[in-house]
Length: 76
Image (cartoon, rainbow, N blue to C red; front, side, top):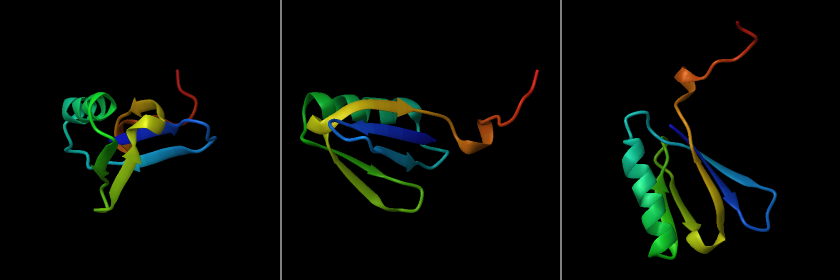
């Protein structure tokens, strides 16, 4: 599952690849809880790296699908 997080006052977007078996609803609730209650959103990507993102700087979060489900090219 792909996760894109926009950071306020920055043109950069944080892109995190989570394991495909991660529950989408769980990720969404974790992001929502971080924005409402805590100061840091903590996630672990598919390579085992920890991502700590200050929730006060998050401008948007896009929860996507895995690479296998993406379609590339021109199709009808």
